[in-house]
Length: 211
Image 1 (cartoon, rainbow, N blue to C red):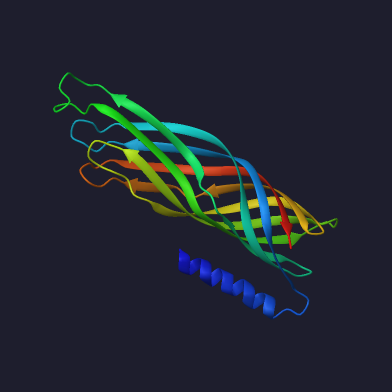
Image 2: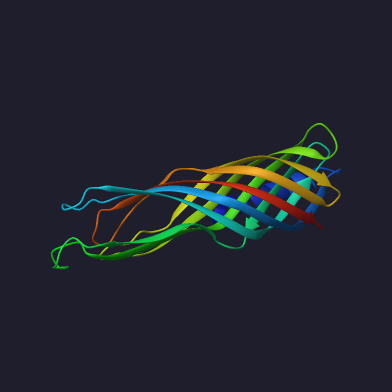
């Protein structure tokens, strides 16, 4: 994913260099929103082939850093969120019998975070008064942490899209947007054949200031 981000950033700088009327800006944004996640764990053992589903809703507050190329007819930018967004966490205790060696007993915990969160976006003006349509494409990594008896889950790169509306007033922008990430599936390693599938989306309000 690092190579993709480098290509995107180079493209933005190249576009800016070819436009005499363009303005190059960098800045910081404040974020507030909610992430909703639906997840299902599928057991793949001989003793248990069941599915367990759970939904999470997490509020988040944070910030992002951005650079953008601004022309009279559009804006193209790249933002980076330097913190993790929690997608959900939970635990369960299995107690199927008196002998843990023969039964899949124990307490399991799991959590997932969205990290290395980049967004390539475009602002397309409409109507006047600084209003614009927001279109974005996300690149991120889902990092998992869990305590399981024998197996573990890894990390996976995900992509998603963003749509919204915004308003620019001088160096300040206000945005309301919706983001939907692709469905992911992670298979366990190290002893089990379990798998986890999940789908996440977010609604967020953002205020940014450019220098």
